[in-house]
Length: 291
Image (cartoon, rainbow, N blue to C red; front, side):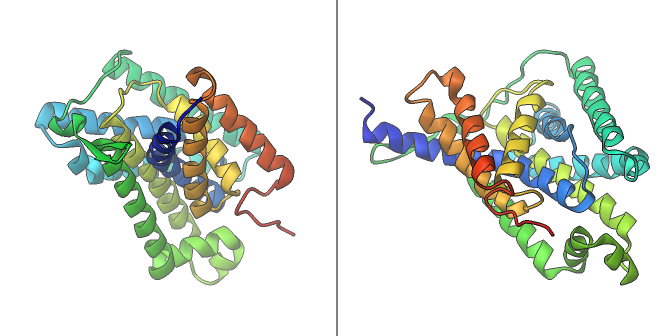
């Protein structure tokens, strides 16, 4: 029988890793909600963020946590370039063309990184990697704890950005009605550039945080992209903050279920929970029905 202390540790561990899932999901939800584009390459931009952090640490000795802004800015720039060169040309095309374009991006980024960095797993070793805080029976690894607080900080900053800045309000207006936003003088094309850049940049921050406590490799984006889609649909299509909450829920579900079944099957439980929610509430936890 599994003791309560093991369950408590699993819940805490799930919250910490779920906060990383939330970042990838938030980025995808932003792009999906504003541009109505399904970005299959979302997880691979996260991978790029992880490698920006790895090379900044390896070549210049930059602490992984200090490379968060660098990871965001580099990937944001790549996202804006991608939007202008690729995505913008298929925005009005059938959905199958959009899916094909973003899947092609996935292949180019993933296997381009594999050719450039090699197919091997890489790891960042920092002095505080083995620091553990204990609160009773609960153990918290410092890099995971920091990842949680950085994730929470990003979510709060993003909320303030959307609510209090002109650009944030403009992004929300475009997500609600792009034609009305255009008639009100908002540069919708520019908002698309910003949305795609921020969306992949937030995911890259998740990659940076993962690199502090897990190995990274060029094909890591596949798993996180799959989780991101579950998070977005689970939380509600286009709901950025629903994605944050659902990421935490999925992280806890996976972590706790690993106590009772084979850890290799823990992802199956997340999929079953996802299916159950969709059957009961097709719009997701925080989604609303559109008329």
